[in-house]
Image 1 (cartoon, helix red, strand yellow):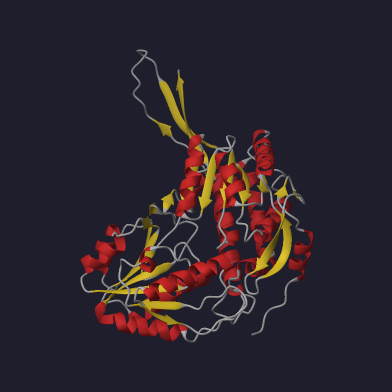
Image 2 (cartoon, rainbow, N blue to C red):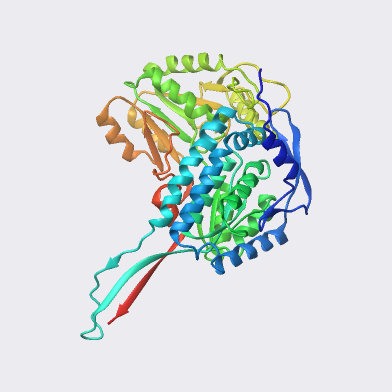
Length: 494
């Protein structure tokens, strides 16, 4: 293993970051907690977490910054320019941000550089452009009273106000930006709570946003547990929109809390995402797609492929090729660019994934495990499960780890029934070279995103969000920025 050297900027940041980022600076108050390196289980740094009182202070400051117009009162072009400077700063600090993400979350530095930062830069620039493109419309109306009156009717979009954003630990920086930037583009102000496991990159983003010209108090970060700080933000009467990414169970709690004070809310929740491989599919491409879709970030991806319905005629070859591939993967820390298997985010997640494997083995499934992994740190070797059936826990629940369950089918209608037989509906992929089948089957797959001959490919312009218990609302595209606005109708009699 050959790990890269920690950048000086990372060391400097770890020395000065002390806790929540409120009104333009770090706080050092509240309970101290350690932020861990998943590759070793050792502490990277110590921060201080907030409580309900700090959440209230942050909301009050964020509300003040909205009402005094320091952000919403800027011209759309001025907000766009600041957000574009923010994108430039994120790009300029690519290596520093990527290392923070890798050290804190555990993922490969290659992913952090290319996706967590690289994709995010494109996303910020795309969303910045929407600041100058929000629009209403004029309407022809036929109001009949009073007799002879004429009316001019139009709609306009206005920012909602204070947004509470609650983000998970698998892509902490990137998903924070998915919520922050469209909200800012719309003219809202934001208080954000990162996951307790992975706060570092989000805190650095807050510094860069300030440097870019986002005024103090417009973007605040509160550290703390979901049960305390997250709950308080969701239920706070001055929060006008709650946006949450995480588990379905917690998402329901967040949604209930928001609706109690009639706040808007969007929920991007869990996925148990199927990959349907038809008999005519290109086997090599399907296997490569399964490995990428299932093992990217060690399977800690809400849209990860985790259950594979493969036509029986190619099932054995599919499993064999996947097993052969995982046997070549070497484990190591994310800071080693050559390592293909990296640690999971935490000890708790490691134990959860191992529990699923133990129960699948007890239920009679055949499990092929990849190479050995280091004893220290939170590693789990990739696992290919065959001999399972659709009713097994490992085929129905979101494992959120490097566990791929392959189930054969003979009849496409039966396979489609299994694909849709889930309370979750975030994403799915269909693998076939038959255009007619692709066109016929994609509308019948119950998922918010359906890929054909690819999996986990995203673009800032392509809406992303789930059906069923996988959530409400969309990230990306104009749908995302519009969700941070209120549509107002204006009727003028003349």
